Length: 138
Image (cartoon, rainbow, N blue to C red; front, side, top):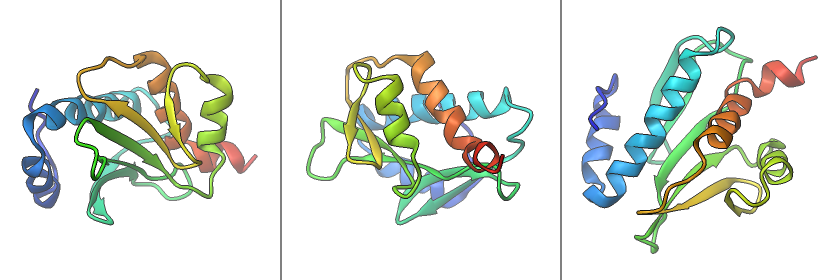
């Protein structure tokens, strides 16, 4: 699966991943963009690097929070999806999907290379992150 990048630095970062990690990260990336495209409230997604990790957030301010993805350092069999640690997102995911994901504190979902993960719950988590500020402004 090749996804055209709108950011040359992001594309270069993806080329640094070994193929066995790149493939699931591209799947995650595709799910983030697919989910965002189906949500009128989100609009355009900014692609960037934050702390050296691929990061994605709504272009319009005060809509959602950044989602970062990366391989897990020192653990080549794992990759992660990171959410801002000062949000309630991961604790909410833990309540909604306690048996669907492996959690890292209040900041990440951890996945294992070569293992499938539940797509619909994951997309729901992405949707909550992409609209986090909009939902909490009420």
